[in-house]
Length: 123
Image 1 (tube, rainbow, N blue to C red):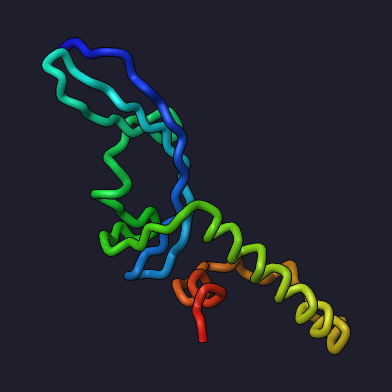
Image 2: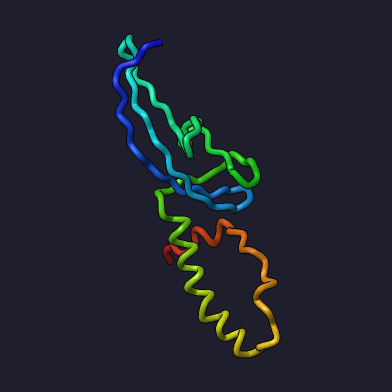
């Protein structure tokens, strides 16, 4: 099947799994094509690999769940930065209270859905 010149745009999305609470972001190259019959179609690629549309078939990269919230890019990174800033004063305070506790043994943070959506909750 032959096609007419493609237009490529770059988009990024943030995702939050409603099953396990995992959050991540992904960038895509979206190629808009028109076949020889005049029918438009779109090809998505991520990290150089052809992938299904993230808007129609989102799958959690952590648990494989399919109930995934799609948000504009920057939401996950923005929440992670906000949480990092909030933890810094608390970590300094805790370290001052007990200098014998090592933070090197602290496990990596697993992002929960409530962590991702809390800053956007309006009261």
